[in-house]
Image (cartoon, rainbow, N blue to C red; front, side, top):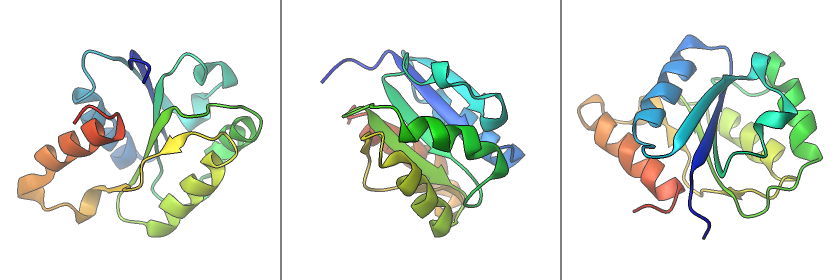
Length: 136
């Protein structure tokens, strides 16, 4: 497996999802991390990344239209990808659907942030990030 040097965390415009993205980033050292709001996303954000973490609060966020378009026409075969949300399983299904054509290696267990017990949340987030990237 190629070493993971660059990670793209792509989030919707929800402040709480952005906060979850920042919490994920803490556990990605020594990789370079870019947290990108979908509203600011450009196709050129995808290729430099060795791994991806995609998060949205609800399915079909309006600002994900460019993300959807790019993922339909790019091959990222085998690159690790994790999906996260607060608690919406429909958001996860949406993210699975839009990443399918890009052939990323979507980690089987999504992160449902608000479902995690608060007292155990930080440790579970770290474990999830490491599992997605194959670091565990």
